[in-house]
Length: 328
Image (cartoon, rainbow, N blue to C red):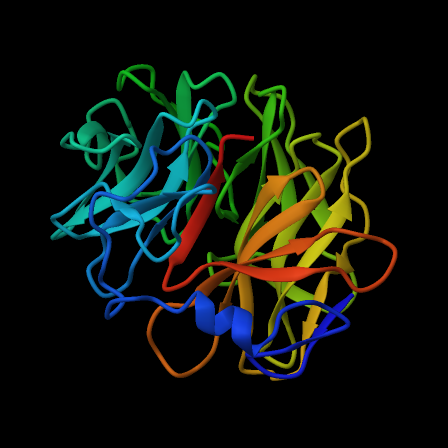
């Protein structure tokens, strides 16, 4: 378990004041020009002050990400498995749509699927948290059926065809999905409402039975996301505790697709500090957000997933929100 005694030093780790200072944004947090390195692998994210999509390559300058959109209203970007595209939700008034944009920049976003599309018989509105399938041919996302207080999972091909509701007639809500590596199913948090996702569901894409698993003792709900590891043998999630703190947990997934008991990866001393939005950056490493209560954008950190005690933690990208990493 990684401990932290404030926002500027990690116990037993390597993150210190000097390192954080070196990675502070060079602008006012809205920055992002054309970027300095062509994107091949790294983080996609938004900034809360302007709600545009940015990417930054692992080999690039985290203070100079590449801005991919300009009109604002973007939420929950996700990188494709080949690293060439980002899918995100665009909010315009009361309408939401799934849009894609190349990570190379210089192109306008393309609309994949819009709320109210006739292909969604129950009326799809309020899109959330899209993610590409491993083969890049489809996107799974969260939506609200019209006249329902619950959320459901939908799938649509990347050409906008073939919409399918994956969780029809459900009496529970579903949150941000993450694919198993073979593309046969997604793992997603589930519960009575979107604000109380207190179990993890395995949702097959072939219409088979949905299985649910407990979050483990002491975890009240998944706050934002579950994330399946590249090997498909582990699942990370941000668990909300009774104290109000949010911490990243890692649970094993066995060969049958069952989720075991999660263990807490880090322990931040301040209850008001949130550790959230986990995203695998390699087989033994997670990227996640650390956010305080002072407002403004959180920062992305990386932590090694280890069973042998405290692990190294480093800052990856300052002033970022709702990140995803790819390709893996």
